[in-house]
Length: 70
Image 1 (cartoon, rainbow, N blue to C red):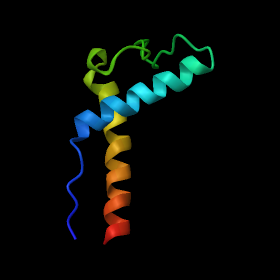
Image 2: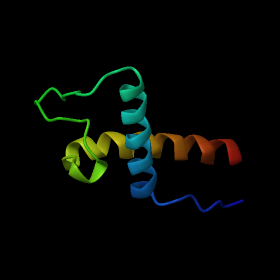
Image 3: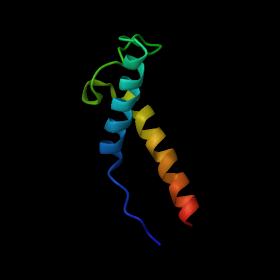
Image 4: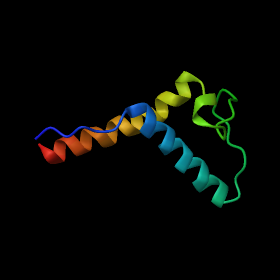
């Protein structure tokens, strides 16, 4: 059974948005990467390196789904 999953880029944007909402709910308004890049910005404003972190999260979940579905 082959399941068509949503585009990784679209889901990565949503993952980042949910991460930011979670931080904001805790009163966190700024979060910086080790290189000093501000992470509490819209997904499209992140560097490719930071976007890759969200993409890798989505890829991991997609792999888990594929493993479960066989």
